[in-house]
Length: 257
Image 1 (spheres, rainbow, N blue to C red):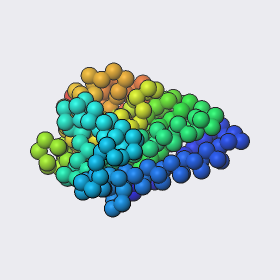
Image 2 (image 1 turned 180 degrees about the vertical axis):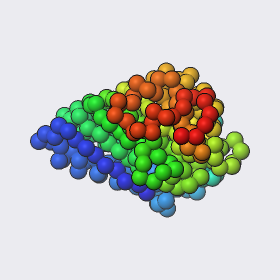
Image 3 (image 1 turned 30 degrees about the horizontal axis):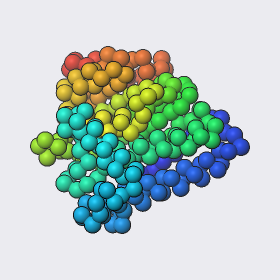
């Protein structure tokens, strides 16, 4: 998938090593089926009309259905066709993390953290999760804490302005990064897809949209360094977060940090 996955298990048992091998196999399988960079993947063949959806494995149809659901939930700000090509990576990366978590639970683990490309699903806890600052290399925008969290960030730090507004086709430039936090029950696939969609919305629409969804909180960093966040985000902030966090501004306020 063109990214790095990492796993931390706090309660390893006799089945953990085998479970990690199964996780690696599962991630390779997901990459083989869903990668838009592999010419022989089901997704690439679907995009070239060499394969029909009803001829694909059930998991392919399930992923495409999930993408349609998120598109409807976000007023079309999420799409599985960025740049006009079929590419459901905005859902698949988070779903792959969820699949890794499922295999770890099946092996008896209840205390673990799985990260895929910097987006994180935790079990048990509490865990502390650093959010990279999009404008200050090597710095954190915030440290989040809690149990059973899914945390996903969309931004420009790693790949530049690569997220487009599906309604205009233009790069989304109103945010430097947007981090969403959800609790147990939502999962990283949906959290990550929502983060991508909300980033494309721009700061005002994104924070209003997130505020209307129970159990979802957001931290936005604007291109000038201003931080804005939803009302419930502070409950995810450990007391010993970055020193500059306390100079941030609430949602709706203006001014650089």
